[in-house]
Length: 222
Image 1 (spheres, rainbow, N blue to C red):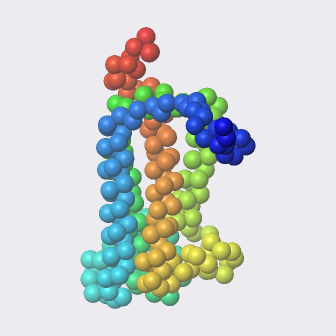
Image 2: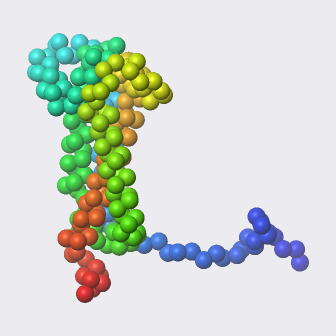
Image 3: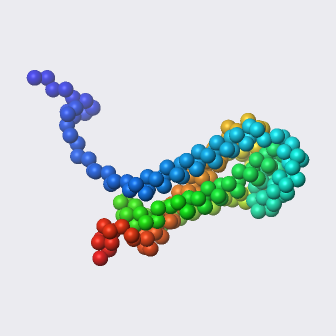
């Protein structure tokens, strides 16, 4: 009788041992849905805004012009964009509207986080304490780098100061309406992923000490 094999001679019907996946709590699933839905709304709004925002929007509205000036004082990157973009009015208004919304998104993330499940979420795949320290430091480093590059940029005053693909991509993102539509949303996504991951790690790490409301978790801690 001919034996069917695949790969390195393993039987196609050979049952390999598998590790059962830990069940995902409904609260966690609902949290992920809400966060992803908010992300889609933010990215969709940024694209629509880049398509429909008038090039002279800052001149058309004194209130909008005042808002741009205020945001530039808080987020130096918006001022840097205005100085270096080929479409300074449009780009500065777009970033002055979208950048603050990122902080609104992160605040929504904090409010919606399933704190009651924090301990069980951490226990499901808890690395060693040293690994936790390493992961936390790496996330904080990337968060700081992302903030310095996209929010508190005060070192590079002109595009020619530094060279490289990253600066070329950044120039594309701020120099045209098409760049605002196609490239800038990816920059927003990068910021959101890094900061949301850092927030999730921090909240989960802290929550495992203070938010033990699940009955099974309480039994394990006795």
